Image (tube, rainbow, N blue to C red; front, side, top):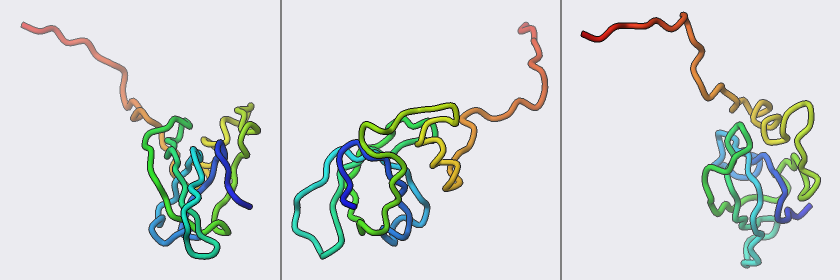
Length: 111
């Protein structure tokens, strides 16, 4: 499977040892640069748990180590959340963006 623009991938150490902590990415472009057999350079957006692009980067990965979460235009949110959010849950990256409130807010007067 060769990735293509629009694919959402889970990238972990199976793709390259540099990804000890898995990341979820959306492919922007597959470079046609000459590489080792089975490896590819990808221009990607790294996605946060909400599925929003947070960083653009080039990554060098083994094609056989990539886990496809969604293919191009097939990536659609559904009742279970976006594929990007489900992937973030799967790789343990999902955390609430806002800390849980431990008590009710209080009002304080300023003198």
